[in-house]
Length: 349
Image (cartoon, rainbow, N blue to C red):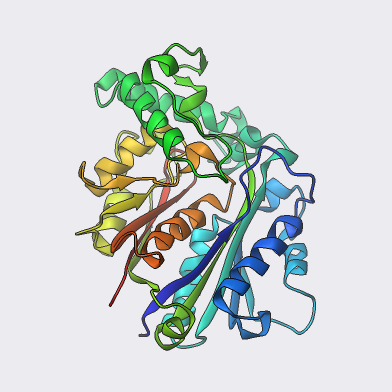
């Protein structure tokens, strides 16, 4: 099986709302140009294209087909799509290269959450017989999870605010939220869904991200320091919230063990709520010496169906720049961390 590496990454600015269409073309064209220029590739050099997005979010069936306009209608391409975060599209592309079917792949994800009512749209991913008819929104479900942790003593509101303060201070120039804030000031803010305050919740974001993968020989041609994928695993838990222990994430633990996380020095975690970062750190077994979300993470910008892929791209960028040797990226999908993917990457001399 061929080794696979990340050789390119780009993302659109995370913003509250764009004026483009829900098919994402206006966000995708500039970042396709950026990542292709950075790798020296053209569209005809890409062996496989794979995307992640949601027809529910776009408000129409087969919306991802319209996104292909960002690539070009001719000549025909080898293309696929997942109705999930594009981190899972990256998994499909990784398999394609590992099996030797292609030697390059471009993976992209996009979401225009401003086009509708995101909290109500996400309720559609719940059990359609017993839970979805009650229309519990995504923030309320996360609030129940956070309350369980507070009442059990698993974490405190100060712990949650500390996660937000560190994330906001780390955020880069393309983030939707950023800035230095004090934990005490955050705790003085009102609740938006008890016990969650505004800083505990990822903002509603429009955005897109793209990652280029290459097999061993091509990777060395395309980048002097590729981020080699040494482990890529995903696991899932029951779709029934009542059947899960929401204080733990056994699917993340299983994926991390299978991927092999020893020696990671940096982790980009796809935690849309502050308490979920605490759950993930414990599930993976990350120590205090591991740097968490140096990009700011999803609390500073959370484009649906692209934020998980962006975690992989952000972590890989640290390897490609030489800032880190071995890194971990995590992506999630579904309510209250139902599905989880772990990707471990490293540099090689």
